[in-house]
Length: 420
Image (cartoon, rainbow, N blue to C red; front, top):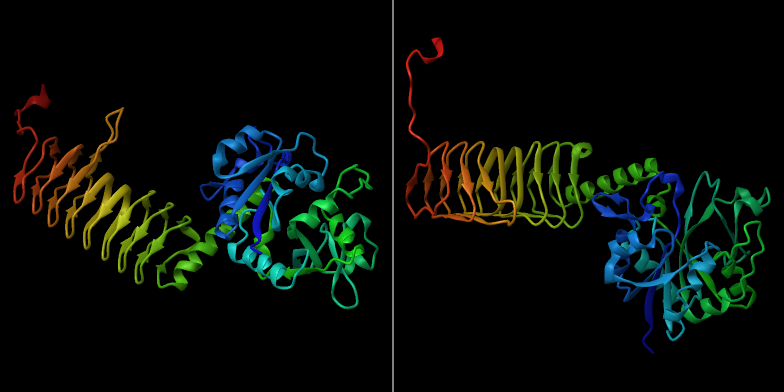
């Protein structure tokens, strides 16, 4: 029988340590909200349906996630077990696996979640935990195993004995459960703690007491399970994610001259032998070809497509630009909403005037063209192939193929005028 694969993202917490008027979960890490990252990661893990449990400042979370998830509501903060129970109406008729994720643990990899699901299915485990080995496990719930290595329960540190506190395997708070057995166990939870809350961790002992098999996957990279509680942690995870992305591109044939000062966002494709100079920012959904040269101090915004051997130089910003093979934008230019043909050279100080205060319009520049320095291209405008634009021109009309365009006032010198 085919199994349902679902996820619940816990997104109801207050996050008071952020000291913010916004929900902690809508703060951004590398241009994307924490909770949105978690939901997108779940979907990249082949999870078919995601339920977000929202509460505090729910409208902000819902504005970010829109209709990409279903919503359950936790009006009172009565613990993680109580939070998952709020999703019961979406789970009660399902058979399969449910992954529990936290909306403030944003850099877990899809591969890790897939591994968790696969082990749970292959080993026929009713609960599969994602755990980690910490040399200094202070503050974390400890994983208690029996003599055979099976997981018996999770003990929170405040409830642990001195011997249990020496255990280095900790609970990440990420789980994969059998859907129906989870629902049964949740209804058996008791608020046996000073906070009067229902703890999801207690489900493990309940399942063990009933003879249901449980297990774990030990995460290979402990940074994946780090959460965000304050702005310092947000900065730390941003640095970790930046380094991870940069490392990925370098391992795939890209030269990054200064890994600490290069900012490449998610979902960027870069061809081999491309060189990225320092202080360059490349935003989401950018494709760069092979043997290109980018930077220094370049800003490549969303949606750009660069062919092979393109040069984007210093203090250049491009946005929604399609740039042909061998074209150059060497320095001090803004090229937005445009197409630039192959082998075309864009002179210093050129800008596409793409916004008239109401609408964005497009500039098209043909191949083998030369755009002189300090040129304004007032969109919508099309420059034919092999066109030449004189320096200092403001181009408002189309330019035919093979033509020279000059659009500037004639210079007038008034001798002795300044002495007066």
